[in-house]
Length: 112
Length: 115
Image (cartoon, rainbow over all chains, first blue to last red; front, side, top):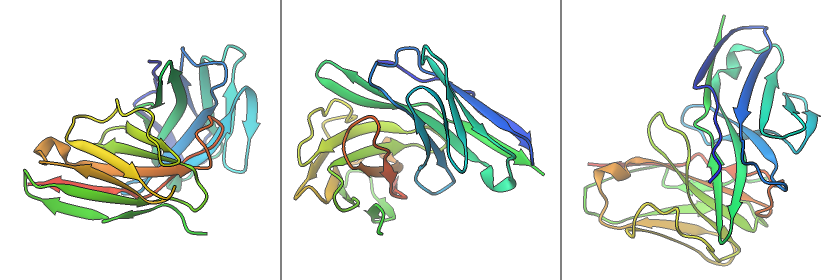
């Protein structure tokens, strides 16, 4: 099964841009890449999704290179409330199987 | 509208007892997923439903775990003869379909503690 790999943790000061990269070497042709944010004692929350190139919404941007073997979540001007764990999700479909592989997540700590 | 609802929010039980966890997905979502999250760890995929069917049960940790869904709505995850290693937060999510481009909407989980 394909797996995703992310940095375990990152620190950033308030107001800085944060980039978190996820590796997914075995991504399949039809797979999308989805990023989630999780606060303590809550379920993950959808942030952004993309298939290729660049996607931007009101909270983040997602950069996906041409080979799609990685993706980078970009959070502009982070604040203390962005302290959370960030997961990338890539669907993994094998013959007769369907498994969803979350990375172990990146714990982002925003420092005042 | 209402999001994914899970009950109970917390469950404490003795080793060896059976437990049943409930998930009410967003209305109209045909896909439903169960995950396990141990303390300080990532999400471990357990099982998914397309409608009322679970095509692949290989993600369930052991034969003590089972899940069902009825009416393309509520789902229950049952753990029989609980063990201490079953202690975790069990998360449920739903989506419009199992297609890769359909984001999942998560509940806040059931925190299960086995004494």
